[in-house]
Length: 376
Image 1 (cartoon, helix red, strand yellow):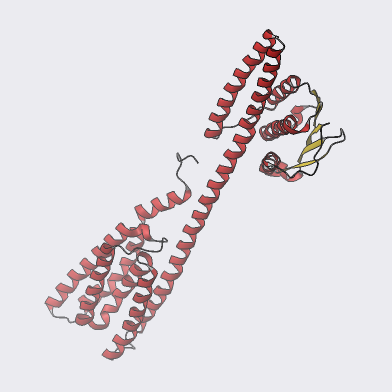
Image 2 (image 1 turned 45 degrees about the horizontal axis):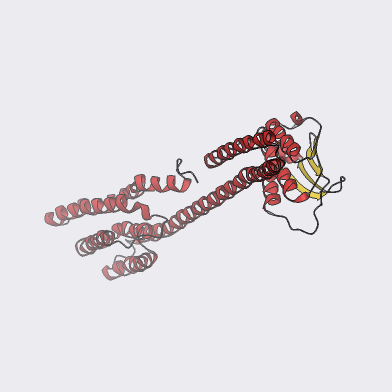
């Protein structure tokens, strides 16, 4: 698949790499609580100054870690040593704050749990959550300030739940984008396979038939006709190369009138009576490219397998029918060509069916149902 345009998954990853640290910036507002606690309570001046400095260090380490490891958000977290060192620094500051300020340190816990939930792996998150719950419950009880700490305890518990829900939503979103990217890759591979089969396969079939005819003409010493056939061989080879280029570029667009002219020429070269009933212009322009591909594939199957003497194409506003008087379907299963026609029909909201023909051979019918008119 072409890599000229970034996928949605790549766009999302670039967003997190560039702007993920802003998520942590939102939560920095909660540092107002330890700051107010240090300012408003009668702590010794050295404790107050050291505490404010540690809050500044805490914020810097927290923001730096998010800026560096935001790529891990939704990706299962990271176990890189620098990230764990940053986490350890935050925990150390929390422990110092617990010693110096008591329950005031609980206002730092949302940052610890946020760091673990968004940036670290699941085992680290579980251990951090367990430690946070124990600290939130035991520290106020040991200090006899449980009632005073109810608000910050409740806030911590609510934020831990919010973090879990948010991380789960982001993880599912990333997984969905990965699945979508995989689906687009498979769809592109199938498209290329169809284009190669329909375009190059038809060209190679025509080249083979032309070569056989040229050899028969040489054996019959009809050199002028053989030369003409060999010139047409060269032209077909050029067309095959062009088909390869357009397939790779994803620019395959078939002109219905031009395709009919090619089909008529192929039938004449192989002594098939070629009849067109109806007006090709009755087919809406938006469906003509896929219709041309299906006509080409149908004729390729006739030339390869049917041993037919005549081919009839019927154009109608609601369907296109291709009939031959060859060997018929027999008991053979649908091959790649038939499946390719059916897949191309689905792309325009139509259906492709293969059945017995009134001419005695096989009929391929492309039917444009009502839904296709609405969706195109």
